[in-house]
Length: 468
Ligand SMILES: [Zn+2]
Image (spheres, rainbow, N blue to C red):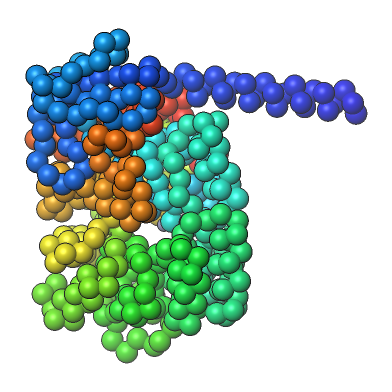
């Protein structure tokens, strides 16, 4: 027995030592003073890009940023010649998950693969938007913050707040508003910083969730169905997920507190984008400062004829999980859903309409569906889809950086490239202002002044998504 314990201890030490070395191996730059010279900078504010810029990092902070001829490179700085490169702020993504669909209503926590992959895809800060394993999310947050693991900083949302009717074993079923209050308080004590209501919550429960969460200085978002966007806005919700894709407001004869299922898609497919009901809902959301999170990445996967996940992303998948993805993908191409073909472009267009009316749009990727949204590739794709949907590249970057940072109350520290802010910097080879797909060429991601070699992370994570 003693011998066995010693062996196990030796084994654990060995595994831990190996993973620590692997993390160190991802680092390309850890010098205290680093200067990027002659870079194009898209700073996250939504303003015009600046060309031929010098950006200086000192111990994890941006200490200088300006025209190259007038911005001094400190003596002894490590210089990165950024001619032909574009610098962006680290992405602040708002609908991420640490779990991934691995089978029929089965979701597995990706404790090994997702944190480094999110970072390798440019995300330096993420809000999870619901969890199946809250303690894993909380522990990953802690281990990333302490430097033990490589990944984005995490704002953790608690477990889904939902009533009966969801066939997922990991989700608590709320009994009533008192249970909702108890649950919100419990997870606040455990350290979550936000909440997510789900498709079968009642108005009473949601009201209590919002009241208790706000008392404890936490925010509430939701993927709704039983409650309409208008009802949630009137109850004081902070954020709604999935743009307008989950709005049950336009279902005729909708019963209060009941999710009308497929009637939601049907009502949205026939909704006139210029209708007064829609304009009035957009006005209400803007007036009540309810942010919307765009997750076009996941909806795209259900539309026949849209691009497949890139080959390098599919190489990250465990072979069995990849086979499931390929099968569903082929079925969608062979038997397209006509509603989806109408819904996707229309509802994507409403997100632009919402922003043009003064609304705050956030960006997320939602790696659920049937597995076609893969961290490391998903944030780049979300930004490409925002541009496809009519936003300028500078606006799309703002949606994916400053808007999220501001929502989280962290915009003094992150969200733009500016003197005094943390050195969270995405390095693009090429000019995504001319061609947004250049964003896929992302050799380096800096978080807190440490530069990670993204190719090394992708190579190390091959075949692991779906496993752990
Ligand atoms: Zn989600």
